Amino acid sequence: MPDPRETRVLLEHAEDPALRTIAGYKGYGGYATLERSYREMEQDEVLKELEDSGLRGRGGAGFSMGKKASFLPRGEMAKYLCCNADESEPGAFKDRELMQRNPHQLIEGIAIAALAADAGHAFIFIRGEYDAQADILDAAVAEAYEAGYLGTNILSTHRDLELVVHRGAGAYICGEETALLDALEGKRGNPRLKPPFPAVQGLYGGPTLINNVETLSNVPRIVANGAEWFRGFGTEQSPGTKVVSISGGVRRPGNYEVELGIPTRELIYGLAGGPREGREIKAFFPGGSSSPVLTAAEGLDLPYSFEAMAEAGSMLGSGSIIVADDRVSIPHLALRTARFYHHESCGKCTPCREGTNWTVKMLERMVHGEATPMDLDIVSSVQENIIGHCLCVLGDSMAMPVGAMVRKFRDEFEQVMAAAGPPLDDETRLAAVQGPAETLGASI
Ligand SMILES: Cc1cc2nc3c(=O)[nH]c(=O)nc-3n(C[C@H](O)[C@H](O)[C@H](O)COP(=O)(O)O)c2cc1C
Ligand code: SF4
Image 1: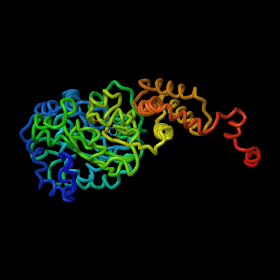
Image 2: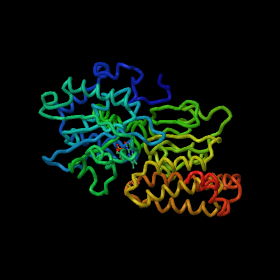
Image 3: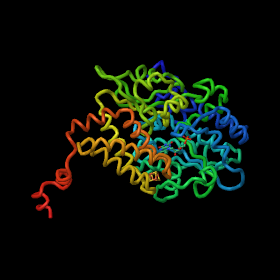
Image 4: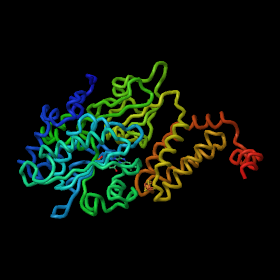
């Protein structure tokens, strides 16, 4: 059952399993907005509603959805819409729930957004591990075709939209919008150089609108109720509700839909139940593992909005809070974070390929007692040299949180290094790396 402190719009009726079927969805008024917009609205009217609503992308960057759709050039060329359902950022699991519980809301959102973008083909790029959710989407898309909401001459309006569900193969980088396009085209999913931006030259070289699952799921209600209704939720700069994934050191991890601007303390202590018995919150990632960590003192009393998180030097990102309580060793957390990004780096550009590799090596040395205090400054400077120097923001996604952890918890790094013992001399370090001489001999 939903918590009464939530403001459920996207997750309204989510506990009803019938919502997954087209009959259940229509029973709650679903597809009425698609019917009205396809029959009665022009592209510019839909676009204006989306722009006026101030809806910001829910996939990470928080860019205005309506503005992005308005960047697509007009003309007869083929245009595309891609729904980003790759959701592979550690801490994020809200799109999974939105697709699993209300797939038709997303399909209706895609169809209406396709009107705004004048796109004739749409794709849902879903992460490979979301097998069950992809099956649910496949079934829902088939129902929508059957009902005449997709395909050619939709509702006899002479408007067409083909929608394909495409399963990814398990690479985090394919969530980056241009890598997603390459993967959809059947290539290895590597980020492209921008500009040109996808809105101008995207899938198969055509203008392409790329939006996150949650962003697109908001579209039917905005067009149904109007931009002003949407602006009635949230803050001036962060309108609407947000499905927030909360995990880590809390009693009730899960997805909670709230108005943007809610106190962060209310999310972590109220809805997620606060830290476990006898524990205290030390820090948290406010927007997935790529966001700079905030200490409890810095972050708990901030409003949970795009602007407040940015002012605090972090970001709301995909809206995924990971809580670290006082049992968590920040140096080990930094190492774990760095390992993830190192593993997922596509290797195309040097600062990210080498920087993630060296950061992992240096953090390993720190927690294994092989580092000197100077290494802390070196690891910080490596992060500074990654930020803003990569082809895509995967490199920054490691450098920002790791840099923040070293900066804000330097004493903890020093304690870990001291507890691990004095730095090893060269001979001992070599032996530690190579193993004892007899083992070496045996393996040759
Ligand atoms: C490494 C990397 C991974 C990303 N993964 C996702 C993802 O899984 N889902 C998503 O919506 N956006 C992801 N993004 C952001 C997308 O590039 C893009 O900004 C987003 O899909 C745009 O949709 P929105 O404007 O609706 O947020 C990722 C970005 C990077 C750099
Ligand atoms: S930043 Fe990393 S993931 Fe992005 S293109 Fe460069 S090497 Fe690849």
